[in-house]
Length: 422
Ligand code: CMC
View 1: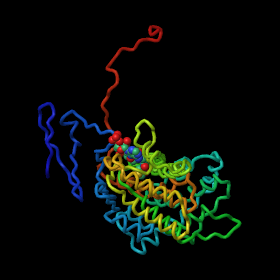
View 2: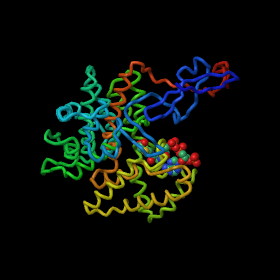
View 3: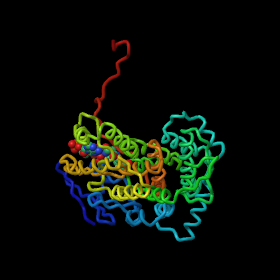
View 4: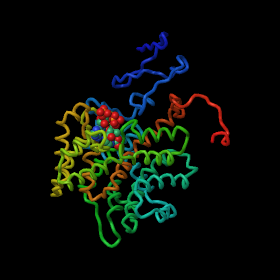
């Protein structure tokens, strides 16, 4: 085993170095505080490995993403979302029989308890569907508090999350909820619950079903991102699955994370409405005082083109071509990308389009409203959250997440009673 040397206050310490499957090195500092008295400081955890994990591999420099060893390009092209969910959670691709059983379970659990449905009556009509989604998932904990079987809870969540998402949309437009249909696949069922109305026949379009399938697969996991780390942190206190996932949904909703897909489309619309002056917005993004960032650009891990964005850019061209849609926002997005990628500011900082840059164009072409974009991301990310929660809880050595800090507040001082403080 190789080691790293640390010299602190003139004293030398040897630290073990562990290596991942793909040769990634990590200096193991688990004994650092007890041997040296010091801790490490790493804001945003940019250099901190919070765990070892066998789920997803990313090489941000080379633009590589693999789930359980399988390249994302192959999964996006050839797999179905339930198959990928199974892979992430169980570690291996399902056999035909295992997949058929998994699909049956996902269908069986997709209805919401009638009482749970009543919760929707209490939300404000303008409530953001992400807030509704996290509240509903937390509420599931009150309906299944004694369920000890984690797999049942996981399947239940996967099955019901799409129903909750579709109901949140129906609530926002004042239409009746549509019960899920047992004859439809996972993605087709979601589209049915979103777009069907009782008065008319509706059959999900296979092209939309396959596009949704690809989008959800691309969102399914991304190792220790903000929301997944949140799910792990909450799960590490032995909070239940529903509470842990509900916290993950809240983390995902922020504009620097999953909320970016909504912001990308709003940004493109704003640039379009403002006459399409790309340089103005590039300059704004470069100006640190403007408070404006190019949404859908940059990534903590990728310092190359996000492989998911590459797939989505191609998909957007294909889908819009097949549908005969000429979306000015897609053309604008491509031009903005071209302009940014030839600008020194973005080149120097390795800022490339991320998954959120093109996903909104696809969702929009599918008729999904902008405020549902991040909910779509959450439906996709759920298998990843579940896989990480399971991995954490099955690790015999897992400990509650509890980082340290460097205190910079006042040194000890004496309390002065209020009457003497003036
Ligand atoms: N527009 C303009 N400048 C940027 C951008 C951007 N989108 N992203 C990063 N920078 C600059 C940043 O100002 C900094 O410059 P400097 O070195 O001069 O101070 C440098 O690039 C490094 O940025 P950072 O903020 O230190 O990087 P980070 O790893 O902490 O943040 C990020 C990553 C994704 C939060 C950030 O790139 C960002 O805010 N992007 C826009 C929001 C977005 O698209 N988020 C979705 C991320 S992908 C999917 C997901 O996670 O949900």
